[in-house]
Image (tube, rainbow, N blue to C red; front, side, top):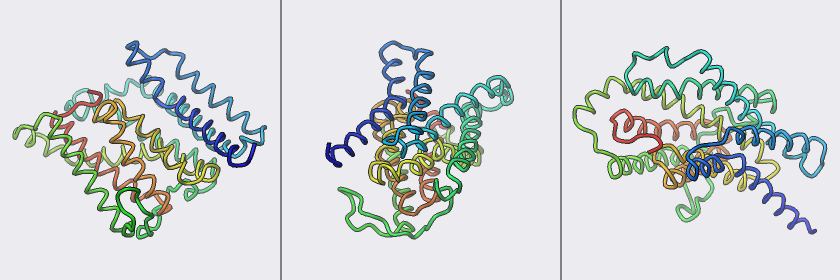
Length: 299
């Protein structure tokens, strides 16, 4: 087998593994049968754990041991955090809050905890925050071309805000076209919640960048190269938003595109700031529509 064929087979195998441990099998089961089998999660953990062990002893996979270690950490942290919060009956802590705050806190408390835990694990695995891009980065770094859009994009201190504005505008159009237009009274009711919207957007952006992107890129950029690592993380990120806002295949596509752009920002600036910034303001738009009652996650 020549080196190019070997490399292509290597990348193909990693793609298959990534799709198998993504939410894609869960989506198929849920859509076809109405439920997700309890064994599916642990089969993914077993697959990742087995690959991690193999990669430690088999030279052809050794370059991916860090990727498998990150994957295993994400899945086990998710399981542990979920069990811990439910054991504490944490939703009773804010049972008297508004419906929006109840919905957001139920998701954001575990997600932020996961993000912090994964950041600490990634630091232990990789040895430095910069290795998984958890540093500010070079905010005015030059940007590489964006296929079919920009052949000579400006530096990231201009491109970052431009992408943020374009993504937010797209979400606003979606919210008004496919959601229920918010009533004037709903807008007035949401105004006192805006500080919480900003806090939740910042925490959600941090959590998702840690869960879906930063450690992944840190682990994959070396063995796969930046292009494949970027595409793989974007697709995984998109699949994870199938039951988000918007729902379904449209939601996946609308998450893959900004996921690719945020990953591109992370790689090219070697830092966390621009992807986090873009992510925050996109979440602000989505969370405002949720607070208005215009859209519902997963539907």
